[in-house]
Image (cartoon, rainbow, N blue to C red; front, top):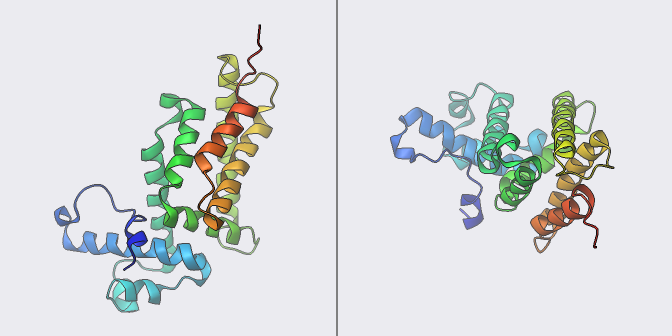
Length: 209
């Protein structure tokens, strides 16, 4: 297996040897599914390919996950949890610091970032089974971000003249756009570019005396 595969594992931090055999195999399936869905998408990525990568038959894989949809849901759940743990909570670190940590973390996990970017693009199709879920995800994230931006404005940490609702959508758009560019060209420094966006658009202006 290629060395870059190992960097994209979503296994928990505990050593696999401490897991019961069945749970260890389940986690191995999730690890390989990240790579398959990240490269082929949630629709084209097949259970057969995942099963082959872990040395199982498709029927054997279904002993651990009842369907591709169930497997994919677990992949997304673990991806979200890994990002949350890496970045911390906005209430603890502040919205801008927490968001910057998300960008920095995504730049270290190409497989997970590719997975998310690919599936979001697929879900733009109204007929995609995850279309409604991702629309709701972005809407919920925008509402929570807008609330944090308003709190930041009251604290003097966010520029007072921006519209929090619009800025919340722009933050997601910038993050997603940078991810796409980085996946196409890994010389793109997502962290530095996001920092520039924060400095130029979200931080209050500093007037020289």
